[in-house]
Length: 198
Image (cartoon, rainbow, N blue to C red; front, side, top):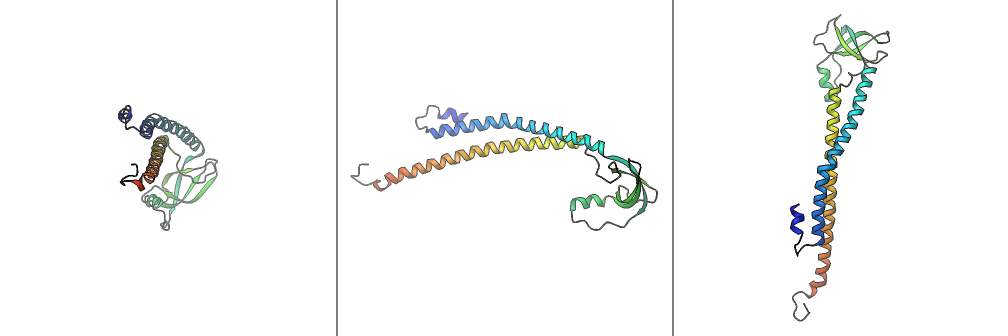
């Protein structure tokens, strides 16, 4: 606003100065009004999609109780540091469990037991046929992801607005410099010579 007001009646005001000031005002208004709306819309859409995923996973995944048959040796080293940290906190065991469809299952799994012994019970997530799957997404985690998506979309929209404004101003300044160069090229050869009419 001060930029617009300052150029209002200034005799040295160029059209580009006024356009720059209006661009700054428009960019500010877009950032303050439009980007929160974009963030809210993206967050709401992400929330709906993620909560639907939570409901779908709760229907498709089942927690069953597994029984330790025997402890297995340590798993081979995992090159992925994120999964290896999770695996270090669990024990690798051979276990038996009953699938939700009633079939008996068995296999090597990771148990959340510090020192597993034969006959110990632990929770395991499976699909309807007894295949091991990850724990279903919980509602709080889905909401956190949706909020982060909304914040990211708002930040991206603000960046696009500010980047566009800066690009337009940069092009205007470049054009202004080109005009100055052309004017200087016309006046330059005669500059300071007596009798040249300048």
